[in-house]
Structure formats: structure tokens, C-alpha cells
Amino acid sequence: WYITAGQNQLFDTFPCQKHEFSSSGPGRLKGDLYWRVTTPYGGERERTAVQEFVADEKHAGILYNHDNEFLHYQDDWYILAYQPNEYALVYYRGTNDAWDGYGGAVVYTRAKVLPEEYVPELKEACKKVKGLKWDDFVLTDNTCGKLAKNVVSEEIERDATILRLDLEELENDVELGLYGLPTEIKAIETDLEKEIRVIEKTIAKDEKLIEKAIAKDEELINNELKDVGTQLGKFLRFGSSSK
Image (tube, rainbow, N blue to C red; front, side):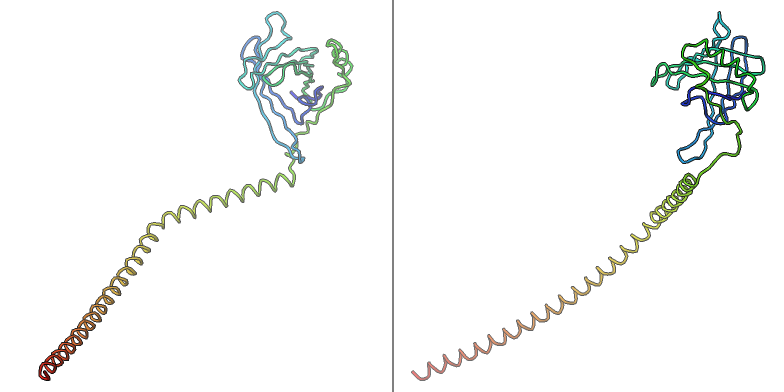
């Protein structure tokens, strides 16, 4: 079945609305829903959902879709008009955590395009609901061709792919860098040890030179002291003789 006309342009007039219905038993209806949405840049995205309905015990034309986890939404369908295997006019009301009392109406047909011969019947059936007018309905596009794309979305997807590849390459570089880090640290430690040994040898050599210089200075001082002692002894001896 296709939605070929919708009243609420927020929910009912998406392109390519193809819904397949099945029943698991009396009074039960399951809908596998497919539709497309138009992106702000003119592209299209596919959407799907599954809805399960239970018929009212007294009125088979009223269907309830309750007990849903997503936003705890509840939809009640009212079949305003129906021709077997031709069309069904559905008026619905719903509530969820974000919006209480939303609603709209759609026309299901087997054909992708609404047959014009059913319009008078549909227009008359709309009068069953206060405020519902056929003139507010919009015909939908069910050509369901190749998904429309746009340059902007393609560029965004391409940039995202490039960014993802760059991130993967960066992760590989980081992993390789971390893997080689211990080797680099070991090389640095080896170089430092060599420099420390060179410095130690230089210090040891300088210490020996300093020791030699000190020893030489001590020797010179001792020699000078000896000379002074000798001169002083001569002076004292000389002084004693003159008396």
C-alpha cells in the first residue's frame, strides 16, 4: 500500500511512502513502514519503522497502537472510508512524551498515484470529522526513484572519510612511536653514559694535573723555606762573630 495523499505536512506527505501490512491473527495488524525524508540540502534519506495495531473489540474500524518504548507514543487510527483492495482513508490522533494530541489523515491506495475517481468519496468521508477538509490534503510523490543526493552532503561524507583515514594514520604513527620509544630511550641512556665516562676521565686527568701542580708548589715553597733558613743561620752566625 502507498500513502498517496496526506493532510498533516509534518507527518503525512513524505515521498515514497510504501507500507506493507500483515496480520498474525484476528483483530491484529502489523505495518512495516518505509518512507523517505528530504535533507536541508536537497538529498534524501531512507527511514523505516514497524507498528503493531490491535482492533477495538466493539469497532473493527478503530485500531490502537500503544505500549511503545520510543517516547511512549500512542497512535489511534480511525478508518473513515474503505474499499477492499482499493483505498482506505485513515484519520489518526496520537500522544507522546513531547507532544500530546498530534494528528492527521492519510489515504492508502494500491496504486502509487491516487485514482481521481475516489476523490468525491474521500471528500464526503472527511466530513465525518469536525475540521477535517479534503482541500487540506496534499498528493504525495511515490515515484521512488534513485535516492537523490547533493553536492554538499557528498562533500561532507568525503571530508568525513578523509578525516577518518587521517585519524587512523595518526593512531598508527602514535603506536609506532610508542613502540620505538624504549629503543630511543636506551640510545639516549647509552650516549649519556658515554658522556659521563668522558667527563669522569677528564675530571680524573685534571685532578692529577692539579695534584702535580700542588706538589710542585709545595716543593718550591719548601725550597724557599730552606733558603730562608740557610740565610737566617748565616746571619745569626755572622752576628755572633762580630760581638
